[in-house]
Image (cartoon, rainbow, N blue to C red; front, side, top):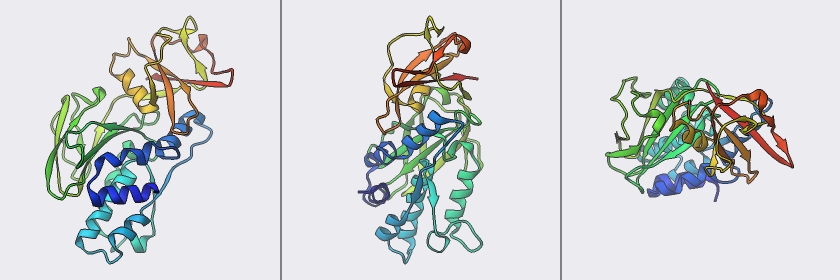
Length: 294
């Protein structure tokens, strides 16, 4: 089954637990973003997303219910990091006379660097495991802006409790659809989401990172830190681990690229980084990159 069909079935059949594989599977958006972080700044591919399966499943006549399904499917597709591949006559892409709700969605996503196509993606825990799905998007080596998308796949309005990443706690997000500033984020945050709808939060600032290129920094070679990896993680999750600590305790990460096709890395937390003393990042067919917090 293609990822487009997976999104369509999750939206129509209420299955938030099905969605993460759409982004994390081999060839999914996470692997595209990882390739950019590996080759940056020389070459950055983007993942193209087409909502054609959604149109097939929901009906091209676009009655009110089908239109809502398609809007949610597009919000998941683009909010999760895919670049929308749309035909304006089918999908209501923003243009004069287009579907107002679809226009609002695209303008909201365009207003925040957190939802650009090469921003990192991290799934967030929610209390509504079947109906709910939430992700953190993070423009780590660009502007440093973060955003959170919360989706309700159920038919009725409900409050979804989202576990917040450490770097977002204490900040006050902006609702990107309304422009309203919301209350301060705590360890968990309750978001009221319309049935088969979504909420997009922006204006969060976890902090900006810089890629130092292919450098292997470790104890005795330009950095302090354990020789043990904290896990095989996405780059986003690796950075999130570092952001749980003050910059003095974790000033950056060195990642070993796994080449598994899913965009994962072995993650090493580092402090006291002196790039000039680090080793070259290519050794015995293994590649390392170091990212530092600004």
